[in-house]
Length: 121
Length: 253
Image (cartoon, rainbow over all chains, first blue to last red; front, side, top):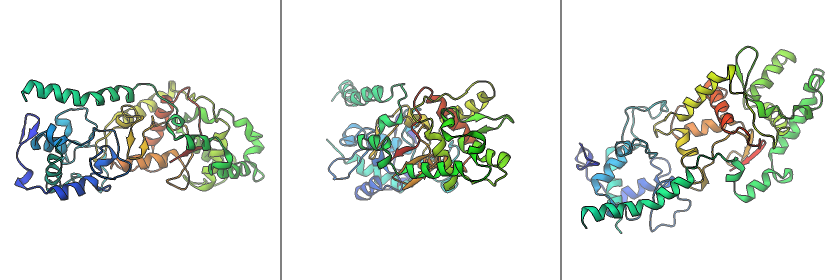
């Protein structure tokens, strides 16, 4: 399903919803994207700057490229600091509460892809 | 856009991040106080604005307490100057002890008293009072000889990715020190300020309590306070801090 630096097809054939995706991005308990990234057009305080701002990411990357970077950024860059949000293999010392579980479900990944793909410049 | 222009544009967009990465990822390891807000940095050095001093005073009282007090063997606590800068250290029986472990062992062996227990108020207080006597002194842990295998174990722990979020310590504390996680500035992850009063905790706490919070943050197994892995990591962190000042009792967000 990985071709080049992208996963072209939606996970499990699911359709993403951008509004739900924005909620996932802003959720501090699950993906917590804003611990490292800033998003445009919100009054969200204390966004991180470890990763690049997400404004315009939908113009820089295709939905398939965004999808692979969410599922497992180490497939693009082995040294990536960004966690893999839909991967369970090859992880060490995982908290027993999360063992065998991805951070985000396939549906949540598709929702975030839909939201980020819409962040055009 | 042609593919070539698109690639050039992507590179231009990425450039500020590459440059920032070079600055933020500098190999230099700086004291944690350099990463604190100016207000917190000043308060750390001001007993009237640093709640951790309440534990120091309690620890100084404990030092003198009882017939077989710490003071009855060691003399005034001022004689502990420089000790905290040399811990963790390998004991005569080959065990790696941090300052808390050394105090607990001293109680059991020389005072005939039961252990206080990790993270107990009296152990935090005594540790803080002893550590204060090294405040400002350069960290100088032994890393060779019997300490070498522990140091290597600590280094491996530090460098390995772990947890559901698959992060190593160094990916934040080396590669991204100075950048922000939400509102928090990432430091070089030194243990020099512990025990520290954390505003987040509203109390004084040990380095191992802080390490458990890091484990939780990357969704890795939280190891018990005093776990061998955390002890080895504590030694490795101290080796990274070699020559940098002890800040204990620290003040942290």
